[in-house]
Image 1 (cartoon, rainbow, N blue to C red):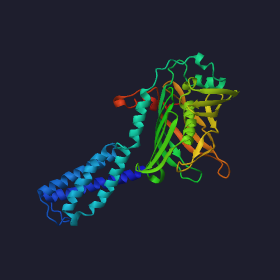
Image 2: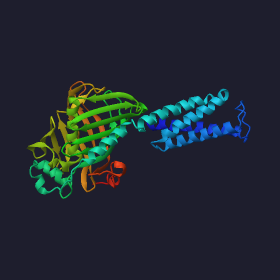
Image 3: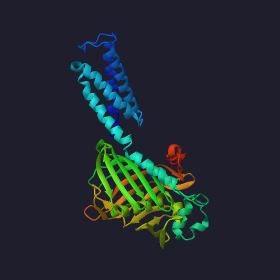
Image 4: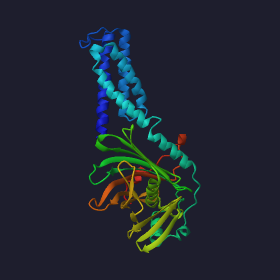
Length: 394
């Protein structure tokens, strides 16, 4: 639906720009234009031509998803409305198309301008990646303190003989809902996790409920978490902070560590308790927060579930939290950069009756890169061949 709205705007804007050629044609005497009854000379005709070109270019840049298209769009709105005012009686209907373009420009500025979530995310990522230590290679000796099923999982992930994982960068897609009575909304997300002295998790997501864009930014830095949500990149919906969110996100950091970066388990501040051949309990501490989860493994030494009673479920406005069992069954292991990683899974809340246990999140890993340094201009480096590898069977 979000894509449909975008293309409707593109069609309206481009058609609107092409209609400006009528003013240019009359101004330069290229053709008789009966629709325009007011006189237009060569100079106003040039204005119509320039305005039309700007509007069409803005529409084409929007179609190609160029992030700075809104700059051209803003100039196009001003130029178009200026020439419309010179032939108001004939051309005033074009103001409606300019209103559509103006709304799109405002959204473009909010989504891609200097105040956007993406700018804050990129800044946090650059800072986090610049503080990473240099890791040594993982050896069998590093697995000695781990319970047997955890050690077997780290070993099967391909960690031994490879550099210790200091950072993970991933993109995911899927769908999410707030409860059993809520509508599913599709999303795409990007995240960066680092595993230095202070684990860091940065996650930005674009969701689409009811065809409208919703932007979400999670940060977890120095054991302090924030969660912000905006509708249409403009209207604040959630601005959550506080100890409850910090604790909830600490569980998420532990979960990401187990699923995305098993090699980093050897260095993490985790106390392990063996339960049986296929289960182990881990207690993860970061700063003032200590959380616990039970990890379940299959006969192929793959992690298949992560269950914690320390995750806090947020209300829909992000203002209150309630403790609730949380699990993330995962599957579909693939080889990425010589490491085995799960590429699909779910998030489940185990709520009391009458709601009961339900899946609120379905996700698929699109790309993942380990120890990705900084690229040009301080931005995270490229993923490399990961996107191709994720589509190949293990």
